[in-house]
Length: 475
Image (cartoon, rainbow, N blue to C red; front, side, top):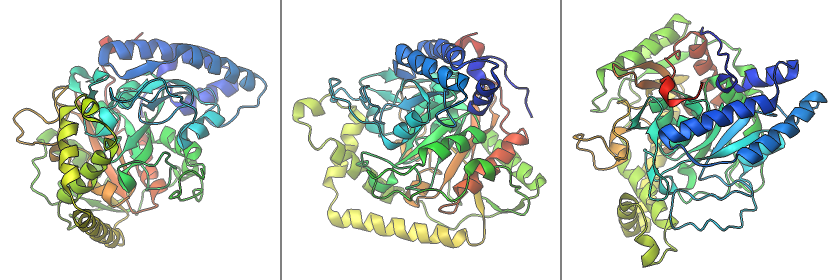
């Protein structure tokens, strides 16, 4: 257990709402503290595309009135929230990191997750950075530049939800909405020392439909699993605009946190059985987290799931989606694109329908294999990423030999293909003080179980890593 923070910008969403209810402080005070941190976070890491101070303070004042009347709009009333700049927010441009998107709008719709948060009284602080159209696992874009890591701004925050991860880590709001098509909430969560969940596909409604198809998810990015459970209870609300939504969740995510992990069947796979050079400090920290689960009564077995790396199938689906994103652009607009994005779009445009369907076959076989595996194991535990954060502004680490971002994050994209819930939480830091993440993967629809196991690790102190250097934040 760690000592509770005292600065309002460092409090969790659950602690903020408890404070509002008790009259200890108001949403206005909390939002002012968060806005101060947001400005400092932006100066240090370039994690925002937009900070909406006036809108946030107006929303905070409305929330304060509701709390005074003891009539909060919902479980996140008055809680500061940030939104990745791929997700629609009414009245605010969603620029997607691209110089090809016109800011004029009109911007008349909220995405489903934003709408549910707005209905529940959340206070929107601003939009966070993304690589162009969310195409890669680091966060830099032609439109908004490079986003740095809260632990060292010269390193990457990861991506594609890197702005959200840096904002949460630096106290610029305890809740953020990110997207994940191949690891995009989990990679930056690992690099920035926060929690993120990619829920079962369809659990969180998504609109407009992603050009990356059913690889794409919306998920919570928070300081701990308890806040993610709180956020899930809001953003999983039904929305007819997503025809593939799963409908209301059975039971409460927050109530599920109270369950034990004793007796859970946990498979620990240090590298998924693949020839992946996991950094020794990462391997050691992840193994320590697994030992903690065993100490809490989980039945742990070191075993690989017996699957092969589906990277080529993922590339076929991902690059085809990217090509679809830019299909409408003329030559002048294409010249404005991130060069790496332009490359994968050209490759994606060359795939045939048969190539795409072959990738779907690979995906279905992988899903069946993981379904069989989870009939014997409740959870699969791996490193989130085999390395810690590297140089900002680069798609791949220098000297790695990788050509695309998928080369250094092989443990995340398989579970977008299978649509399983997967979470990342911190489990230590390396010799440079950079966070290390452990990934918990559950069977489809076992979102509450993943949250429960993650919460148990938080309660056991596994995720108690040092805060980012004070130089990058505000007092």
